[in-house]
Amino acid sequence: MAFQLFGFEITKRAKEDETKPVSFAPPMSDDGGSIVASGEFIGTPINLEGTARTEAELITRYRKLSLQPEIEMAVNEIVDEVISSTPENKIIEIVLDDVDNISENLKETITNEFEYVLSLIDFQHKAYEIFRQWYIDGRVFYHAIIDSQDTSRGLIELRYIDPRNLRRIRRVGQPTTTDGKVVQPITEYYIYSDSGFQQRRDRSYVKDTGLKIAKDSIISSTSGLLDESGQIVMSYLQKAIRPMNQLRAVEDAQVIYRLARAPERRVFNLQVGNLPKAKAEQYIRDMAAKNKTNLAYDTTTGEIRDERRFMSMLEDYWIPSRDGVPGMKIETLPAGENLGQIADIEYFQKVLYQSLNVPLSRLNPDQPFSLGRTNEITRDELKFFKFISRLRMRFANVFTDALEKQLILKNIVSWEDWKEIKYKLRYNFTSDNSFNELRDNDILQRRLEIVQMMDPYVGKYFSHNFVRKQILKQTNEDLILIDNQIEVEKTIDQFKQMMPQQPDVNPMEFSPGDTGDGPPAFLDNSNPK
Image (cartoon, rainbow, N blue to C red):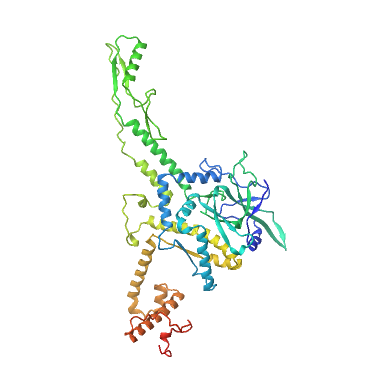
């Protein structure tokens, strides 16, 4: 099938990516792109846990794994912690405080464009489903649709793409010499196929079977977890595959053991007299068939069936006894004595939850919720809080990628300016985890206690500036801001003391004649007001 390039590329970045400085090692990335040389097959076969042969099969296995009750409960706990949806608050906000080389108007414009990007995927209402799918699959892809006749309109639509139908390719060419410098051509693009990517019998992927998509047409974010080859993106559920299979095997074995060992089996010694052997055996079979039952357990449906035509361990023993010859003596086999022990099941459940990085106390329904001081928070909760923070930072790459295309296409910022801005962007997620707030309050309380102890020595052994910088950890920007705020508050207090007869006047409001330059009108002595 012939290729067709469908999409767009940012011109300056495309030129930069085409030629990279030569190196003996190929470029590596955590996006899972397959690195191939010119003329080679695309991709490499994988065989994780001996079941998944392609990346699409691996994603399908992750989705089936997420349907298990234990996995689903842990995934929901993680997603609920990352995405805190409240009617009165936004789920995520962009923070441009660290970007100090642009104007306030440009910051406001970037914030508005960020809100527009969120509206394209309806993140305010579908954040839970979007993040959950990203966490399970380990990746998310959107097709950035633009108006080819007027690219200044920016992004028109962000359409979700099933990751099983899309692969990123990084093709490395032969090194060449340009202007006395050795460069290596690198071409990056995506391959899209409705039917997925199948393997050939020689365990290599079919060469370039699909629609060729320019890389800037795809907005993506991956988990950053790679397999041992460094070319296959894995989900956070990868570590839970083996513990989940072990847990299911132990549970099935426990159920079968309970059914097999629960009843007590009896021994019947029947007198057959001088009957021939064949008739004696027939007599025993007739009596056994008349009184016995055979219960069979189906591990697939969980049903119990009565199958009398099969021999089973649950049946009683029937032994013939002739006249004058004592019958065989067999002790009655008691029922299992350890039927109530499930320590092995609890062990594999614990291993499963630990593989998902979720504290065991959160998954125990008998564990009460407590909100105490930071020194009372367990180490597992601290590790879980850091894990949630890493997930948020990783998932936010999809917003950075979309915002980049939106700003450059609409000529709001240039490609050179964006390279400086993108590394200073931060995102604030609305959080229900109160550990961060408790930690900050606890640290501030301890700092204030130290300041109170040092107060008699300030001005004698320590300066005010030393206390504010070394103890309270205030930066130069904080010092200027706090000093200005203190001066404004002092002025407001003086104004209130001078005008006690007008309590309804709001000193923070400007009079109609104020232009914003200089002090407010109520602080200007030349103004009769």
